[in-house]
Amino acid sequence: MKKLVKLLIGLLIILAIMFIFIQKATAGIIPLSDWVLQHPVETYYVETTEDNYEKLWTGKYRYAFLGYNGEGEEQEIIKVMDRKLRPNAFLRIDASGSYGKGWVEITEEDIPEKALMHLK
Image (cartoon, rainbow, N blue to C red; front, side, top):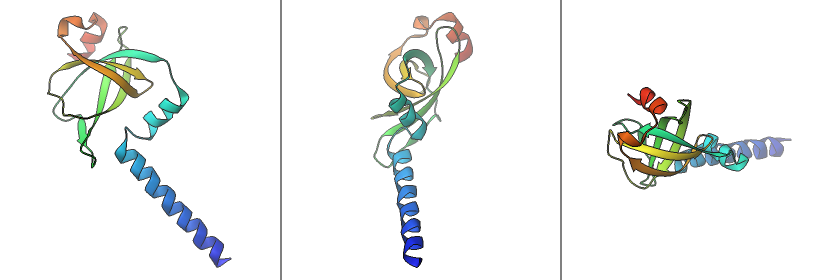
């Protein structure tokens, strides 16, 4: 019986370490579930700030954006990037659920009016 308890505790520790590793090395558990469930891809518009990122131990940057689609609907978007973005830049991000996929920097004039109202 003691061996079974030790085995279960060991498995729980291993699962906890795996959870922490996935959270810190990727965009996180929620975007990982979005990737598995394959939500349709939508376009969102975001503005970068000085404090919406976290530097990961891998040297990459994990950004958490609050984005708006062309209709002004809000969505939190998580994206891991290889480089630090400049602050106060506007991005168009393709996202599947909260998992950011592709992105491109755009000008303020390229943002739909309903999304721009929320970003300002």
